[in-house]
Length: 238
Image (tube, rainbow, N blue to C red; front, side, top):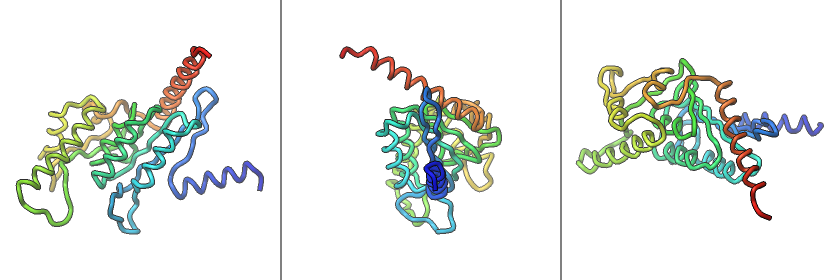
């Protein structure tokens, strides 16, 4: 087997096992890392084997490696998630937001619940015309103690989520909470479903677009960063 065939086999295995790959890009724009967030975001508890999940303990080291790599110049995040563990989702969002390299997200089928902070954690975000975002209050499974402290804890979690979202896009916290507490859209729950352009009009997502626009955007951002760093190196006194 030749070198090219080995590289293609490794690439295919990487996609199959982790959903990750590196987009080669050009000499001017550099390589772009592709990261997929699909299914349910898994936290400290393992979900059933029949569930599609994104394991945060896999994502966090990959994001650290992207930050440390001199070969990667940008990150493209593809989202089709129903949400999941709040702490795990916020951890992923905070890691993406703290990267020094350009980042772009693309919401495909949906980016619901804790998927919203991940979608807005990048420098620029896209959503396809039929993509959806579900915004609702914090919920918890299992036995819950009906005490004031429990509801205070829920409020603290919700404030962390809304605070993060509002600091990374143009929606206000008041409007975000209005969407969360909407009683007219979901039959058995509070919340709001935003489809495509609606997410843009609310100030959550930057633009309606697909993979073409997302790839073009991340290459432009990565190319600009690479040129700036190159110009900076030339300007240093040696």
